[in-house]
Length: 103
Image (tube, rainbow, N blue to C red; front, side):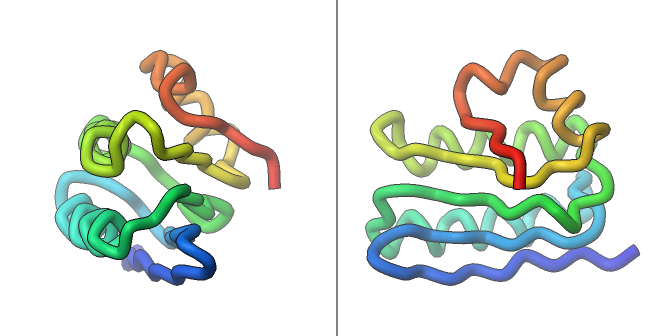
């Protein structure tokens, strides 16, 4: 399956819509999008994950990258993650660093 990460910024809130599988092969594309959001001076990062079908350990590292790159004062919310994706985030304990939000 193909991967896509689309960034929109509105009132300094960055929204990234993810589609497909976030793994070692697609993580660099997500990192570029996160970097663009950080450069824009965003005060919040919303990751729309309704169409994210898979999150590997490399994908988890991408969320860590987002936390580090955006800074501690920036809220990061993952919205609408499938049960399998949300479970992966929770098992890694990363739900303490980001907000998991139902769609």
